[in-house]
Length: 232
Image 1 (cartoon, rainbow, N blue to C red):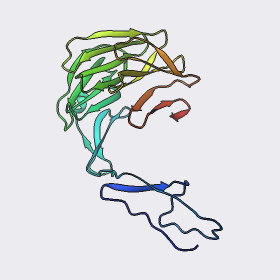
Image 2: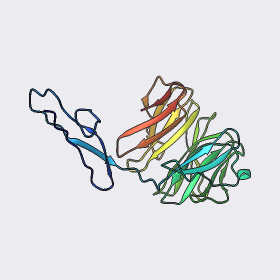
Image 3: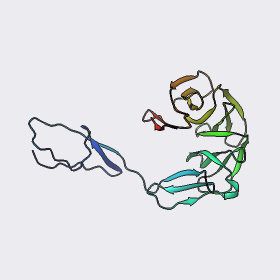
Image 4: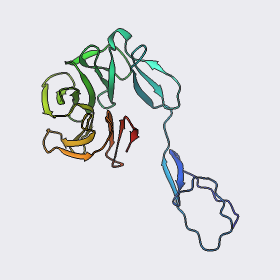
């Protein structure tokens, strides 16, 4: 006992923790009475050249991006074209940012690197928005009415997908498994349907005004914001 051991990641990875939950690296185990077996767990290291995209709602509304290390903050869309962005979605494969613009009553888009905004759909009371990159489609919610719509990213083939008795806030798409997730705001629930709008299932109840949701199909988790904070 008393000898320090260190976990050394391969290029592109970073140490996360040991299999017994400890996060010190190097680690030293003292007063060891029996054999100790632990495995180092690694994660993909963040790429500091990657971008985080976000919408500024209060003050001067803006669509912006910043590198994941906090540097290089940029405003991407002329301020007069931003409106009131409630939520946004990004598709690297389609090179597009899409946001729900409640102020101008529309679903808008712009190139990832920045540029002028164009309108996908004109509609009031929009809230959540999500992109299905493979299908070249965008999904969005009309908050008070509890409706969810779908259209191609060029604005064609717009249609209402389904309607609920509860107001609907955030939406998220899992193309790999064929699901759309959404926040039933007034009902306090997280729900899911097939991407064609069928087979509604309530997954989580008892939430305080859930408003935004993201899903990670690879990790098998969903994360949402509510009046009680961020939940998983």
